[in-house]
Length: 368
Ligand SMILES: [Zn+2]
Ligand SMILES: [Zn+2]
Image (cartoon, rainbow, N blue to C red):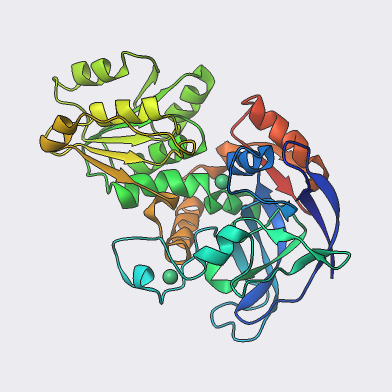
């Protein structure tokens, strides 16, 4: 079928919105009609060409939500008409990692996905007979996409898809860091570094876990206002004295939990140093640049601090994204407050421009 899609043709150049050919779903795959898709930093980062593992041409986009339109052979758990959120972090429920409670990092399709292919090593996207690769296994800057069913979470059809799509990436990453990776205890003190999508999600997660004190640190007053809206009890402008300030405010002990959501290694170091002796857990969600390293004083670890890495918030997407969507519908998560701009697919480059200027938290593409 003919689809409309935003194609990354050349690194460092604007995306080109154009017509492509999309082949029907094969074994275990599903055709999804996109209704909404968030524009994320990861898309912009890949388009810039700074990411050494990037490839082109490809259809970007990974924060999608839509409706199942057709099923390939052997699809077990989805039906036509289901509302779905796309998962760049799939859940096959069969691999060693999926069968373990200790990780959410499914290994079933990882190798092909990283290369831009669907699990059988081919693409469904093409133009003039030439293959166009799939980005993050999702390629949701498009009117339609084909994805393996293990990378789709079926969600409550009552949820507006323009809100549900935000659970495909940053929001779930932040919430899950607090609820799943750190498993924040009730009554504890949490420091969240960064108040972008992931950091604000971590504030929400800490609130859902009933933390007593949630300190959010950022450089933008406007974002700190949003952090207060989502449940931060204290908001601080970040600086070199942040660790000192955390220690002062916690009787010299440090915070029970720190969550890093900036991707800056200097801030990661602060997150480790602000964690409490004895049991402080520093959770790293931010993605640092390739080749960068984290400087940690080993004595801090000997004295009981721990560091955890968290990808997609440690969430198993097909099981847990639907539950988060239900909590949104129950009024526990104000997803709508994250949507700052609504744009069309043709305006996708303006979405990048808004993000570049740090104007708002999320632009959402509406396909209807
Ligand atoms: Zn993202
Ligand atoms: Zn798996």
